[in-house]
Image (cartoon, rainbow over the protein chains, first blue to last red):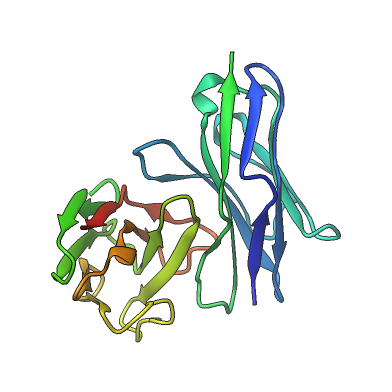
Length: 114
Length: 115
């Protein structure tokens, strides 16, 4: 079985400071991992994905994530937060042979303050 | 089209009525997924279509839920005898073949409110 845990339901940062959104996964097989962002009243947008290539993955809008197998983690980071980053972020796992089902975390609401 | 299109964007229905939600995937995407997002929660998998293979219905919560897809085109999700706990945003996603390498493109969802 596969699962994903987002450790923080809410994260608040000041504009210009680093962002860290934590995600741990459980998967019996080699996983594919994604981060999606959902802005209010908007659809889910793919930020980045890990599919067994480079462990450090760079995505859109300056976000990146590092796959750490030993820690079963895929934390999302950004060096400097911008007001427009305020949104809900979902960590997602799937794996080959898992029926292509995406398993979503419960989401982390990111708040960016002036 | 350029993206995944869902209709209606909002639906308010009375308890006990049937509703039908529509999803137009990206042209050429063979895989189509339905998810449900209840308020304050993550997404729950409902059903998955891949080409002409039998759909994976393992996420459908009850027999009141059903979905159809003709070929690689439009899909409809039908909820019969709606209940208040069915209130949620229903999201559709499509991907070219298997999604791991490509990611999944989501529609903006249908917000269903059962009163």
